[in-house]
Length: 74
Figure 1 (cartoon, rainbow, N blue to C red):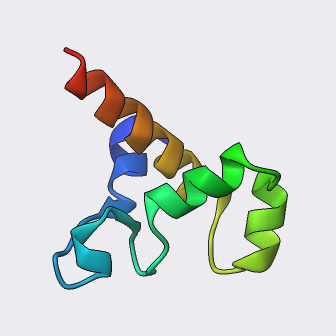
Figure 2: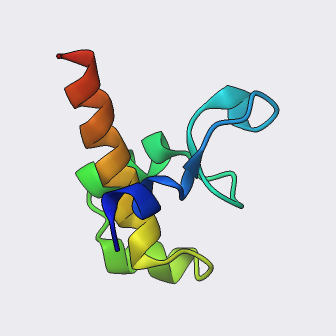
């Protein structure tokens, strides 16, 4: 899947989670997923806990974070 397609999975809406970036169709923020990954949780554990998520959703969170950091330091 292209990076552009992955990034389409991440949306921001001021009416959802105070406008924080979330996985489309959920109230799961990119921040929440990244914090879980940086802690003790694995991708498989997150997917088991949230069966509606896909591996691509998790990848989209990581790509979004990387793109955000990159654009903030350019």
